[in-house]
Image (cartoon, rainbow, N blue to C red; front, side):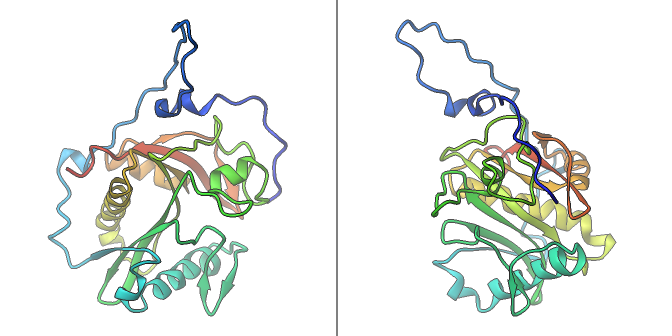
Length: 249
């Protein structure tokens, strides 16, 4: 997909993320306009019990991947099956694995698996990341570094802060039956929230398939759109934002 023209003036990131607000002037008369904070609540107001399931949730990192056998390889192969085989995205690949420049020691991967089969997953990256010319996906797109994503992917400037992480490559495997997709959806979002919380993040921002917006609302997760709908190789997507600080207590 071709990149859009450079957007006009965006709202400062601190109007959405108050922790990024610049210092007030000496006269103390600054005025802050803060968007309403979305609430992230468990499905139907009921706590999600992660213990009552045969689905395992593993958070992978460069420092612990050796403790989980070939789970990272199976996760990257599952990504290949979804994003390259099914959706036809033009992404880096080798040996049946999909990966890109954001799979680094800075990120974390939340993987849902059962009896050796990867069912779902998501990658989380700090918005403070900086490796060479790249930071994180949404910000790089806004800076014009990615041809496949619109530069006006967000309604505001991409945030940079310790308490904000980006979610990307969120997927549920086609092998998950329709009867179990609701359960897997809930557990995937709970896993993402837990990883973010463990990294002291209070908010997550990221590109998700547009259909995810509907079931996120059904699950009571409080996600709000923060960018226009757009297409990646025919797949409708949209940037979304939600808080995680009160999700898993």
